[in-house]
Image 1 (cartoon, rainbow, N blue to C red):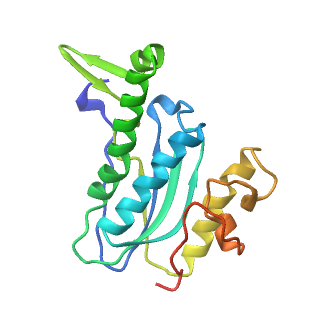
Image 2 (image 1 turned 180 degrees about the vertical axis):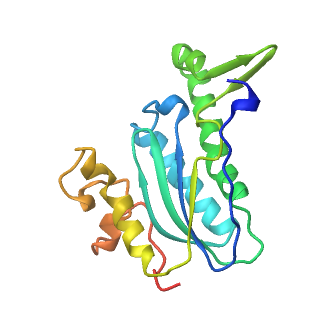
Length: 185
């Protein structure tokens, strides 16, 4: 697909808005099935949370996509920059891992060639999905939607049983990969 046909996504970087972000693996491949890779995503979320001063309200890491619910605390934020800082480190680690561990077939599958340019693609091109939330009451509804993903997919019977989600935290568990910030932002 050439650049003129690439999906575009508008973002609205409005102070006082939360963002429901969704981004997918290249060609919706299940690249997030290993704990190692999921931990790379967790690490990137931690970094973005600190670097960009955002409240983390909910997340789920599915086999081929990620949902986040974040609330930027600063007026001058850019969703594009958040996504870049979330996705780039995971992509770099994945490529290095494949190069160092004879992942030639998958490495080839994730390499896009256009003319003389070769680009490694862990994530689907484009910005993914970004929905602004202006009504604070809708935060809990979106969090429930995010947490329900593994149940709807049949991976678990209860949202809090999926270890790669904030559902267990909101259900009172403390042995979770990431603590969440208050929904009362």
